[in-house]
Amino acid sequence: MSHTDLDALKNLVADLLSEARSQGASEAEAAVSMGDGLNVSVRMGATDIIEHNRDKGLGVTVYFGKRKGSASTTDFGATAIKETVAAACSIAKYTTEDPCSGLADAELMARDVPDLDLFHPWDISAEKAIEIAKEAEDAARSFDARITNSEGASISSQTGARVYANSHGFVGAYPTTYHSASVCVIGEHGDSMQRDYWYSSARDSADLESARSIGERAARRTVRRLDGRRISTRRVPVVFEAEIASGLFGSYLSAVRGSAQYRKSTFLLGAQGETVFPTWLSLREEPHIRKGIASAPFDSEGVATRASDLVHEGVVARYVLDSYGARKLGLATTGNAGGTHNVIATHGNNNLEGLLKKMGTGLLVTELLGHGINITNGDYSRGASGFWVENGEIQYPVEEVTIASNLREMFKSIAEIGNDVDLRRNIRTGSILIEQMTVAGQ
Image 1: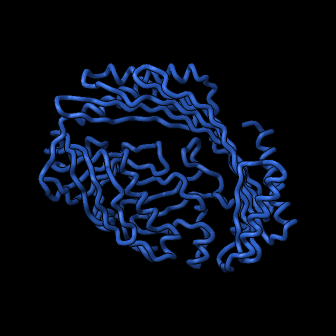
Image 2 (image 1 turned 30 degrees about the vertical axis):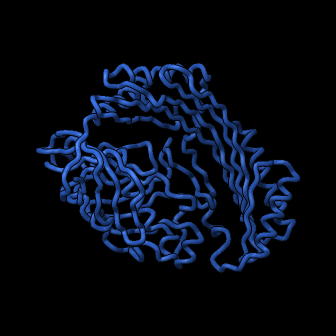
Image 3 (image 1 turned 120 degrees about the vertical axis):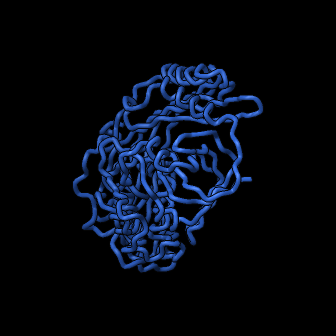
């Protein structure tokens, strides 16, 4: 993505805003995105998919006082721009006035946009990507005789840019890259058959794990699940492995999102200032981590992002707000239009093995199934598989169980978070030890 490309996108949003003004809008905002990439996959040593993608789109939102209309298109031509703005204006003229609608406040715009080092193009051909994918799959298939089949290995390299502008005079743009490599294989032993996977992702391809490492890890995760057993129903401590642990904090963020608060559809209604987690635990948003998967200099409304605590020493420090949700609640936007950016959980000094020793006897959960989370009342019930642990040591794989509790209880009973932090996601956390949950089995 060259400077010329970014300049062209900036000119495009300027045209959108100019057209909105000419059609009578009192305020307007526009966003344009463009991206291209390469995706390849192999299966059982043979090339399966080679795909070159090129995507683009633009959207415009107009305001006539407190009436709002939005429209979008993938056509960047002058006629399409005029028609798209006209469609948005037409919608706005027929909508009901909403006193909370409108642009984010002008003084909150990101006037100084930092370079977060998010753009690292990978000059890789389809042939080379296939070679790497085959190396990863070969490493998995040759790792253990119990690996009998493969769902394939994939390499993806994406380059993109997004430009946002509004009638406050704000124009923000930055290019990004995202690269990933993954392997998924199937193992068999007797009547037992299991699948598992591993992947690596990064802004810079130089930061990806090696193909061999990814393949071997996928195979190791697969064979360890073979010959799983069911266990009887009981209440025991539970460890969520780091790869799935971020989902717990994802549920928390959903519960403190502005829309859940003003709709009164959350078990943490009005929880700002309330102690929800143990006092040693904090959640901090760090939007400006260099090369961060979720780093961003401004949110989708142009509001400058900044580091701040979401949870401070167990206490809800703030909600997750865009400008609309903030106005509905009589608060200020937190720069989270479009979501959060690099949420980091406090962790201790123990790795996963140390957490298991601390747990003693209980269940290590490595996979969750279904969507049994009720944000309205906090009830939590999901299918799970993993490993039974005794005296801090894994004894055997466990399958076909359900783990259940309530999120309030789960948050309060987090005993420790491991230092095995997963950096591949927006929420950065290690494995999580919860003091007690119901495990429903036979």
